[in-house]
Length: 320
Ligand code: 8YV
Image 1 (cartoon, rainbow, N blue to C red):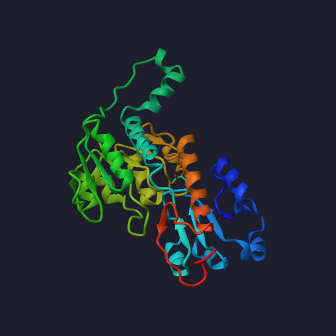
Image 2: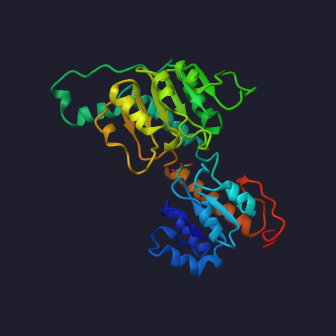
Image 3: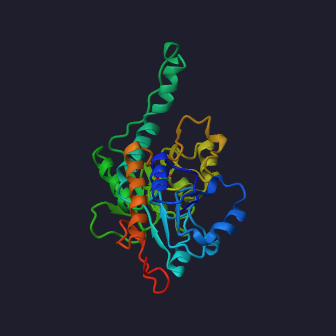
């Protein structure tokens, strides 16, 4: 098993090492040399939201059978290439939905009620010196959601409990939900107070938050990103926040993690998190168990627990 991402979780490493020969690609200094000598023995890749399996790597591994990702997002895996080569792909859906949705609500409250700023106010001793500024009410604010999959729905359900009217944008309208549908993101942004990015990152959704959308959201609007950094045109977001054209932002993800635009560091209407949507002890264990369970299922010729790609290869990977 080749782990392409930096080790994301000690339990995952421990469990993988119990069952497989694990190569941690991230800490191998001479990667081309390593691949030259080990490529034939690698049958599985484990990645995450940081690194998965791109076309170049897949082409270098002649006996790769499965990519098991420690993430729900599949944007770091070349799915077309996997399909073409009959390589199976699995991810970790469902188990992280609650955590990511909880965090989205946490970010909304943190931005509108200025929780982080208030914490800094107390810790720095400012409370003793001056008046505390009023914040913005959250309950009842309209929430627009881009992407109404598992996570988007979980965000909607939580926001409903705060009496927030919900609207959404997806490629096609959902017949089974009661929320208001907007066929255009700009229209959605113009008609909500808080806009949440909860869709998968694909070529179609890259920079789905652009200047026009940001301007439509406006100086009272708040952007919450729990998706991926590249969903947002980051320089546009930064300039809108700096110029006050956007009211605020709660960001768990960035274009070039762990690098965050420093212009944001001085802004009190912005809450910045280090990509921790699924980052609880409970959920990370469940994600690790799914990664391992999928690999074990594959290598014992059983149905995958959470297949992300249904591939029926008719030549080399049918029996193990
Ligand atoms: C993780 C994620 O941060 O599931 C995803 O798509 O982005 C996250 O859960 C990451 O993959 C864990 O290392």
